[in-house]
Image (cartoon, rainbow, N blue to C red; front, top):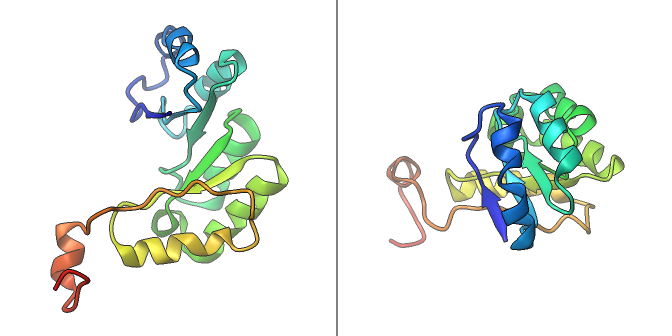
Length: 153
């Protein structure tokens, strides 16, 4: 099971920590974004006591360095990158390769359109062990309205 906390705890490690027993009892694989992207100390503190639960973060990264700091200092197990937000396919691929070298699983984070999904899967090239992929099931209204031809008509 994968749980997305949506930055609900800001940087409050103790509140997040109080959920760990239940999450571990349920054998949750990852806890996504328990804190704000820049709350590196909070991530590091929770990761140190999380047991088998691994933290996922990075969808708010706006450049390579933000993702690098999460990988190097925050104790995360999964780096989630939005290719459109981080600076494009080239930067996302740099993050993917860096994460792989550090033993962190790369996961795309795409929820806008199938075009964005197409760009977001490019950084996976050559990463055979990185198999988690977030993607939109249906187009957002804006993406659909900007496209003359869509899959559903």
